[in-house]
Every structure is written in C-alpha cells, then in structure tokens.
Length: 291
Image 1 (cartoon, rainbow, N blue to C red):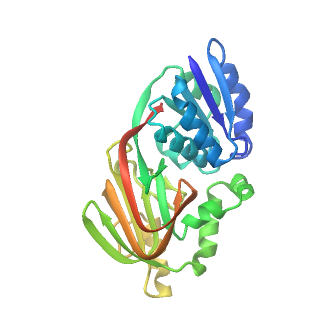
Image 2 (cartoon, helix red, strand yellow):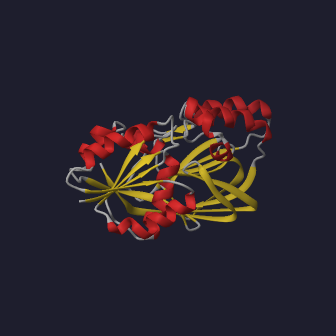
Image 3 (spheres, rainbow, N blue to C red):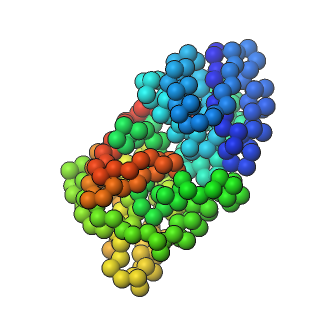
C-alpha cells in the first residue's frame, strides 16, 4: 500500500515527534511510506489537495488544528481515501468523542485492518471543520491561547482564558436560523458541533450526539440581563440543563447566523474568519475515517 503520514511536530507536548518512529516501524514494512511534516496551514492544505488521491491510506498525527488543515485539503480535492488520526494535541475533543486510540502502535495495527466509518463534517462559508464552529466568549480564546500554555495544561488553558476574558466580552445580537426555526437574542456563545465535548466548556451525553446522523448540536448561551445572573448561567451549563433560561441546545443540519456586526468564528480551535452572515452546512458522511 501507499501510505502518507502527515505530522505536526509542534503538537501537544512533543508527543507527535515521539510517535513518528513507532509509526514508521509499524507501517513502513512492505509498503510505500511517505512522511509530510506540516509547515504553514496554507502549505498543508495545498499539499493535501494535490496529493491525497495518490495514497491508499492517510494518517494524521497532531491535534484538532492539524486535522482541520488536512480535512480542508482532503475535502477540497473531493477525496475519499481512508484517513486515520492519532491524537497528539492539547485538547483532542474530536478524538475523545470517537474514543480513538492515542497509542501509536495500537492505532497503526488498527489502520492496517482498513475498517472505516463515514462521519459528518461541517462547512462554514466554504471552509471545512471536523467537529466545532464557535463564536463568542470562548472562540477567540481557542486560537489566541499561547501554544506553550496549551501544551502545559491542555484544554484547561481554553477554560482559564475564556473565564479571564469574560469581563471584556460583549454579547452580540444574532438572528440564528436552525433548519427553518428562528432564534434571536444577545448571545455570549454560539457553538455548532458534532462532538460530546467542546473545549471542556460544553459537554453532552453520548445519546445526544450522532456523529453520522446528518445533524449538528447548536448550543446558544444567551447573555444575562444583569451581572448577578451569571451564577445561574454557569449552573445551567455545568448541570447540563439544555433548555434553561440562558443555555439552550438545538439540533439541525443547516444553520444561518445573521448579525449587525461581523462575528468572529473559531473552527476546530483555529481562526475561521469574520462574517455578518454565516451559513453552516452538515456534510453527511464526507469523512472516511479509519476506526
């Protein structure tokens, strides 16, 4: 087989670099084996777009951001090559939801069996994401948090950064249409996801999330009218009260967000652009993942 391994050596606590020797030993024998070390986001997307169809298996070693870069090249090329993912980042929400194997030796043994599962992915105004598109208080935190801090304390870095910035975050008025139903208010956070966890901030029961059901979970965190209501807001989030006064979760395949001012988006923890009108679509079964 022709196998391509894409590695982000900066991911996590240097785990990706440590994994590479094991991956090479497990996958190289008897196969045509190529390693691509990620550079810039643009270079990685361009490389994957051009080369992904030339291989029988693609293995991604890195964090959620690395997977996002590969996914954007993969889907841009209309690729269906089986793709394996060895999580080596600081958060790994996507991998945790799927309960993917992080041990490189065990993961590679599984990849060679070529068992795949078709998973839904998202597209936001033409850019793809594997598990979450977020706007509001914790979205900017995800891509502004220093890599060194992410590597040291993992997803807690996102939570700490978000909490520290809450006093500077202004709610944004948004009109949000989920499969034809309209919700309009001032929101602190909007998170469109296909995951049981979003940066450690929101978490859902396994029964709520279908990774291949053609729908997203749409979490809306309404801004309280008074500061003394923040306690009630946090209580709803932490107690998983999905239909409270401030925190609501809906399900849908097509989401449209309109706002008087540009809304900044984070896609899989990386900056995804600013838009007055945002259209998010569920691409049912677009990722052919090795499991």
